[in-house]
Image (cartoon, rainbow, N blue to C red; front, top):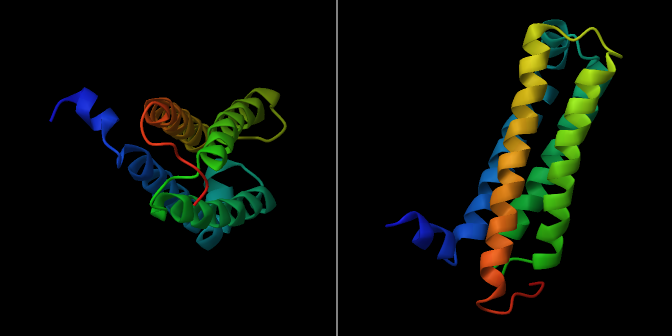
Length: 140
């Protein structure tokens, strides 16, 4: 299967949404389950880790719902793309601001999230563009 046929697959966008859901569920679960340990390792405040962890778990459920639809909800996925780019900007802003004494592990944790969401947003955007010419996708 060529790279172009992967992008053209009707399952491409749902598969990317499943990947987004899985990565957010894993990150959120780690941040909620190990808030104190991660705060110590990263230099990030425990309330920030807990709050974003809970948000990520809720978001993962929403992304899984979108991925499970027979026709992915284009408008919602468009909002997800914008949100993912926004999350990356927030991650970089957090590091650049210097408000928290972020450790090297913390920098790696935050940068990993930024890179992951940019890659996912780009794949989601590609999926939306590729699906535009095909079946008319509406909210399911």
